[in-house]
View 1 (cartoon, helix red, strand yellow):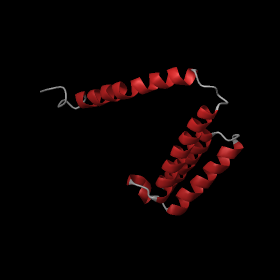
View 2: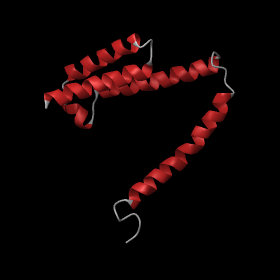
View 3: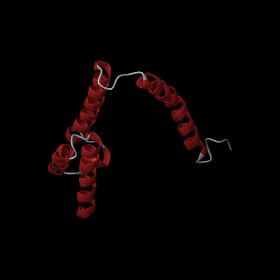
View 4: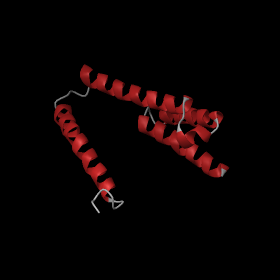
Length: 114
């Protein structure tokens, strides 16, 4: 029996491959990021691209859900989305708080439904 067939070895290979593939880009980001001015145009562009990617992901999950999320009624997904926007502004435009808060609200509503 090889390492990929024992049930856990396959996960180990996936984790190692994932770390190897992303570690280089993370270190490159650290090196480049340390040299960027926080108030500079390039840093602002990077922040805007990151926010746009999050917005695209949330929009896709809201409008075209896949898997288990597809079973959640559209109105509940929209309610959690709107609550996430409210949390975003209440937390002084903190993107993590808005996304996390909306996800937590949807999780709690789904848990109470069962």
